[in-house]
Structure formats: C-alpha cells, structure tokens
Image 1: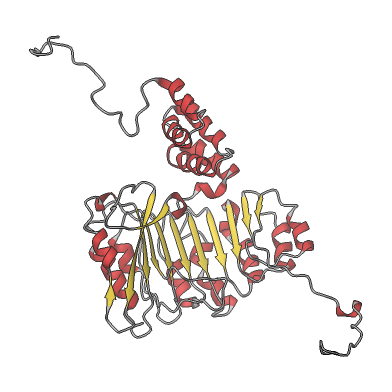
Image 2 (image 1 turned 135 degrees about the vertical axis):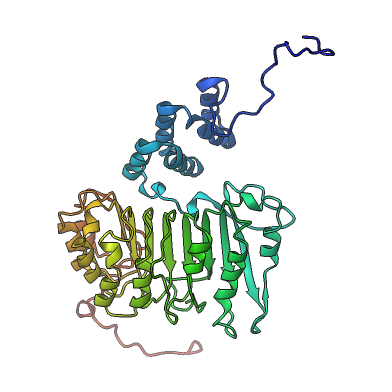
Length: 418
C-alpha cells in the first residue's frame, strides 16, 4: 500500500484500536503467564486481570492466586472470581475465602478527594469527602464535596465515603442536610455502587467515643439511588423512628448499620425493607429493648421473607447474644446461611454449646465470633465445628481465685532517707 496515496481497496493494518476492556490479550496465555511470573507486583496484578478472561484456565489461575503470598494479589483474585468467575468461581470463594464472596468497601482503597488531583482511579478508589460545621446552627462546609461533583470524571465514580461531623447545636437537621446534598447530586452520580454516610469516627469498641449524629431517615436515599449495591450507615438510631413501610430496593447487595443503640421499632423498619438481592447484612443491635422485642422485630429477615438471598448475617453488640443464638438456630434462614457473625456481644459457653450442638449448621462455611467472650472451654467446643472459625479480639479474661492467693506480708513504709 502506498503510504502517500492509499486506496479504498488497500488492506488496513491492525493494532490501531486498543484491546477491549473485557477482551482477551493478543499474544495469548504465554505473554500473560510471563507477567504472572514476574517479580513486579504491578505486572502480576495486570496479568491476573487479563487471565480471568481466558475461561476455565483463567478461573483456575485466579483460584491458585487466592493463596498467594501477597495480600493485593489475594484480594484481586477474590474480586475477579466474584465478578468474572461465574458460579464455579463464587462457590470456590465461599469454600476457601468466604468474605471475598461479598461486595463490600474492601473492594476499594479509601482516598481523600483532592481537587488538585481529581478522580483518577474510580475503579479502585473510594473517594472520601466531609461535611463539617463551625459549631453554629445551620453553618456547614461542603468544600471537597462541591469540588467532587464538579470533577470531569464524576460520572465514573463508583464508591463514595461521605463523612458527617455532628453538630450539637443542630442535631435535628445535621444528617438531613448531608442526605439532601447527596440526593441532589444523584443525576451526577450515575455509576455510584457503594456509599458510606454518617459518623466515620464512631468506635463501637469504645465507651468514650459513641456517636451523637442522629440518623433521621434512609428512605429517600434508597429511592434516589436505585442502582446502589452497597450501603453503610453509621450514627445514632435511637431518637427518631424510621419509616421504611413498603420500601423496596432491587439491587442492594450489602447493608451495614453501625450504631451503639437502636430501638426495636427501628430494627423492625429496617428488616421490613424488601431486598430481594441482599447477600450481606450486618446490624448492630445495642442495649435498647428486650431481647424478645428484638427477635420479633427481626422476623422478616430470619424468616427469609424480606431478604431471600441472604448469605451473610452479622448481629453485633447484642446484650443477650445467647438468646439471640437460640432464635437464629430455630429460624428458617439458618439451613442455607454460609456465613454467620456475632461481634462484640455477650455470648457465653451457653451460646457456644447451642451452636456446636445444632444439626442445622451443615451449610455454614464461616463462623465469626470477633470480640466475644470466648473461654478456653468454649473454644475447645468450637473446634468441633466443620466450618472455618474467625475468633479475633477475644475478650476473655480468666478470673483470679483469690482464695488461692495469700495476702502479702504487711510492710512498713520507709522514706528513702531512713
């Protein structure tokens, strides 16, 4: 072909069009496997992203990467198997790395939004913005959020971390003002999949750092973002009754409610939301209301009516975990639940015995008892379960039998100059 005078019948050279995002890489498996064998982490990560599109072979290599020495490789392998691995890939995750099965904020790195840099990696970064106040009623700052929604790549944003600073002079409106700001930008956030909203400083393990940010409603948020897959809310749910009647959301897969106290009426409202595709529910229950009221409020979830596809149930901070365990073990949902979690509650050997003696945990892949009071005796019982165990931050402290310790001899205090 003449370089100066091409004709419409000449053959067109290839290589001018970039490889499709989900297409296989030209050069075949050999080139990708070279990347996977490289000492460069970036090349290995890229190779793993490419190999997943090569059918069963790609799935096999991603499965092998679940045991890689590098955390980023393991995390990426789990994410790729969940998204591209089909039924086989996801089932392997449940057996081998159960928590990677679920869509959570673990899929993104948290990055404080900087207007000077902008949105540069929306596939991997959850951008953090804040709503702060001056301590006076009605005066709030949204500087980085206002810059964010003007960013040229705002339509590519997938994950948003929206922090709200509690205003003690304006608690009746603080959360609503933040909610309105997000809802008003919904037409710009067309690809938003994951949203955190609330008090990011809430520490449920500390008595001195409890949130006073009042969560007033969640209804408008779910209506404004029908494509949202992950929603995490943190704050105080104790003073205002939620209204979730006849509320439905088709696409939500993960719902996390973090609070130190939540009345049974609000638990009932949240559990009554119709969430046909919800897979992951973590609910902090607190100390308000009787355990019977809490169990009754949770019936739409425990019966499988409101969330028929639930795979992870986390019930945290309960003041009577033993009774809650008994209720769950007698509920219809337990027969098909792969992951069950109790965190920072009050479980004793009574609750542990109920779990280990139950014949209904045959499908359980992972039991999480993070922050529970697990004695050595209870721990030995748990070892009998066939599922994986996650018992981090065990709060058990052996009691000292003072009858076995003789008092120290009385010793006269002598000043140093004597």
